[in-house]
Image (cartoon, rainbow, N blue to C red; front, side, top):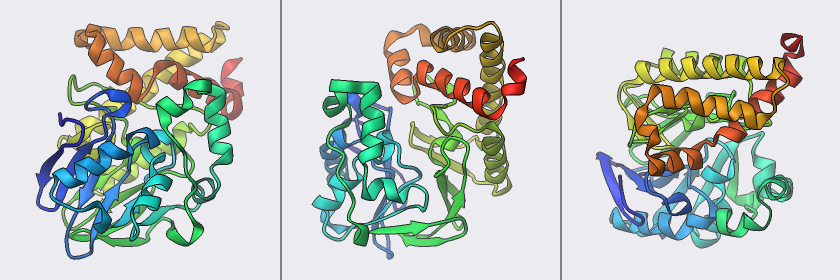
Length: 314
């Protein structure tokens, strides 16, 4: 793991930056690319960790003012909440996001209102200030578009399932994929694959189709925002698919028994303890909860089955 303000070089022209999400190492990453197409970031963390991110850029040997591209896999606050503040601080930075997410960056009112219902007075300390992105600094992208950044072009891959506005970025030359949360959570210590399935956009059919698309590209490395590089791509995707299915079964079983989301979340937690005894390490468990907490994941399944498959609840 890196420390706050530190950069770890993964390859030529590629660094992982630890944003130190909510003060914890190895939870939320940003990726820094340099090269002839200019300096860029893929995902940027929350508004509360902007200074950690900028310190990481400097640690890699660059002036943050050199950043010309900010690429967002999706607009959830843990991976894109810093965007507006960064645009204000970085005079040359342009933002690239899926067309369905773009309006919420230009006017984050609904995004902030929704998060405030969950986090209340903790919003400033957890997520920092959510700053609008000026429309003239924002570029809408969709499936198949290409963005020149760092050493090569990245192709946009539409990957819904975790969120309806979710995209991934493919470096076909270097066989790298920046998958966002569609490839799940797998922290470096201990390496447990966990699905992040919050409401309101969870759609399992879309998610499975997105994972199929990822595998057809045959990437040699996934660069997860939660957290770090994964080289055993097929093994990772297989485990993620298994956990999505297993949690779906647990959620359905609980909902048919009229259990609430809190009880379903406890079932999710119990299934992980059975798989990995290291999760009894409270520090590791806390980091995983920050990356993808059980309650919100259970709430995502509850909403999904209620809205998409009510017939399965009979």
